Length: 480
Image (tube, rainbow, N blue to C red; front, side, top):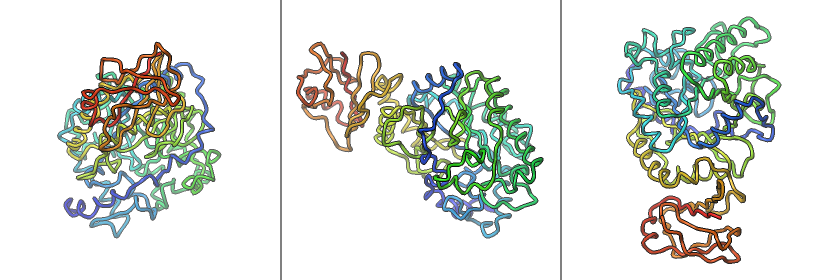
């Protein structure tokens, strides 16, 4: 199969991919269960303080520039579409897809470059895809040959072939919290998609109750792979589990569209997995996405931001471009969009996990590095309004966002494209006193102001207005 033909036929399929594949934002967050383990609570508090992280989806699928894993799923959905020379026959397509293992060779892989860019952007934690639904391991698992370190894979001869380990080590050296993304479903292992039956949809293709021994094989396989990650890859802070259809039947919410189609109980014994994880990694945050309960330490709306403050730990995971996985010539969000997302999320008590997808050569798009640099310039000045803050009521009001810590309250104005700083601004804050000091972060001198019935009316000098003209957000600090 010629890669050029595949790319021509397949690249377009990712552009229409939205959030419908999993729809994590539909979850009822009122059922959140607070952790009891003191080490978990401490780590969760720390995680909530750092606010901003990097997610990376990467695997052999980057060679074709397609939606990660989903074209293997025999469902008639836009994100599952197959194109290219083998698309007419599912089994030929699956064989061609899995054969990408024999050509995957990201010779430009240099995770220190990513860690450096993410640190400069103001990110404080990383979540890396150790395995997506297709089952291809970006780590050296002894329980499968479908992995980057197998002899079939050209990159296996590279001294840095254990990609997950290299990524985690590089980011830890920058003092990042480290998280392992791990897909619970595995469409490559015969204990999940048993070769006796053809796959029917994203779910296990046999009834676990009818074939308990086969299901036990899958449970053991999953436990063993997660144990590898928890024991052989250094200090781990987060176990980020995707594929929410692998869950106990009793946890299915029939009011959520994608959950009500789950045909079987797919209980993998999360209590056992979490206990093992925390034995080896004390305080480990376990994020069993969408499976509400004690093993979802924070909730993860996907490609969406709640429209209100939420008093529980949560994280919006979203893409810097249009796709979770690498797409040639992807279109990236502007600096303004990303900063506005970050400020909006933090004001509502959440974290932002922003995805950047490496390409088949092991590099990011140049524009991703550029956006990281731009973010860093804003965050380096205004970070005190983000890190270690708590949301302050009314949280969001029009173009204003409210956060605070100690005696400081931060009022951030989300400026529209082309909007300039006016000579006077009324801050919607009615708790000022005569001793209150108001500054515009980035300027040393306090602003002159007067207290009005509508808030604090500040006067902004022309020189300051000119300096802030192109900024995506202006942060006013009110110190009482």
